[in-house]
Image (tube, rainbow, N blue to C red):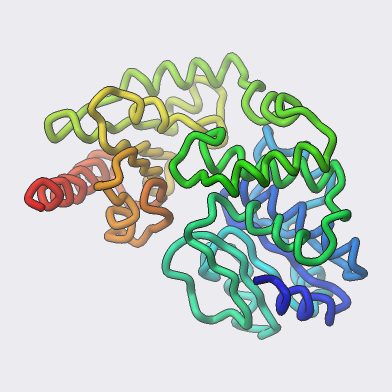
Length: 327
């Protein structure tokens, strides 16, 4: 699967590696591991992201630096590798740069409906994570190059994109890869899990308390919504990053098939959609308002106001629930 990509990447002196905007554990883990792979194989790598690395993942950026893109740094790159997103618009300034300065570009991702504008794409929707795919980059080239840093980066992505190995995207192969990463990296699972999940501030818990009080149920208790506002962030001295994982709480309510977290932070309303029913495809909900992602985990943006965003998304969700019931 990776033979051609391995050959192509080694043709360049410097490759820019982009992770998607509003980064998460999978894209940062895959990015760090891919940059380390390039360096181990004689290719200079520069890691780019338009946004800051979340606090709970900044330890990964110590393994390999990730910087904001600027024209001088971008011009140093002979080619680009984009990870955990399958459309140029998912990578911020990369989209504009690559239009103005066309260069070879490659993509590795696991989301549906990939863009066809890349020179070479590896798109496996069935994979649990992009980090699971990047493991195969090492496997098909030189598995001995998986050291502690690479193993922890890839394990982080698998752990965060599978709900700590709970989602139905997890396969026996996923578990085998996770086990192999623990063996090759010579670390214990808690060394990663504690850094990623066990570093919440008291202010973040105060924010969660406020957000929990906003939970509402719709459509005979099949859809749950929760929201966070700019005022709530200001009152608790928190940021957008502190909302990570909040959507899991309304989704955990008995009988709920889908949940939406709305974040009204002053520039429209950002939405995180999750489903725990095989019959409910929240990617379809998100795509109706210009977003997208996976069947059970998607994101989107709404111009607002918050009340209108909630109304529109609940209506979209209700329509799909009705069609599911009829079938």
